[in-house]
Length: 199
Image (tube, rainbow, N blue to C red; front, side, top):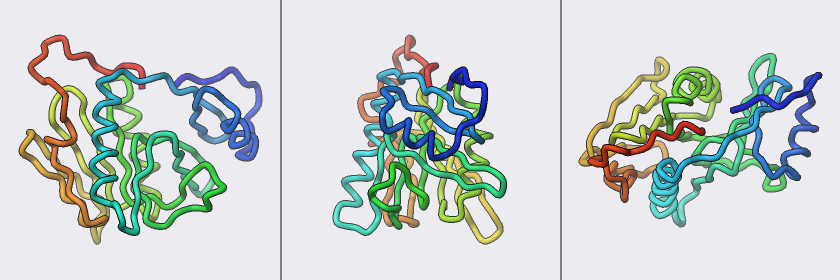
């Protein structure tokens, strides 16, 4: 994310109105907007595989997946933030006239070295503060590995899924995510496998 030059913070209403007309997506943090850079093909293949798997399994079910063009609104005690996760599963939809969702159950980010700190720390803490979120997935690009933060009775526990034979259970939305599907068309033997540094 790159901060846009602005002298004063803007309101949520100004941000949302601006996003509807903008050719570039921006995330919103406490009144300031940050332009989002484009992603490499590696990132997009994995994100598309994730969305396709969820869409196929959730067809005809109450919950539905949303792609990275949909914002998540995070309302903290003293601030509001809008992020564009790579994928969300929603079981209680926000008004369809809005451009964001308030009630995600599952959120996923495909991470890179450039975005790792933000995704693993800042966004994680904000996403996990949302009362409806049950699982947050951090999906690696250069190896078949996913870290899941799953809500339990005493808070969130961290789980690790590694290797193409691993399967992530998502009983919260009654689906499973095989890593073989998540990483379909990704060749991990390629020594020049690029890291997505732009997201």
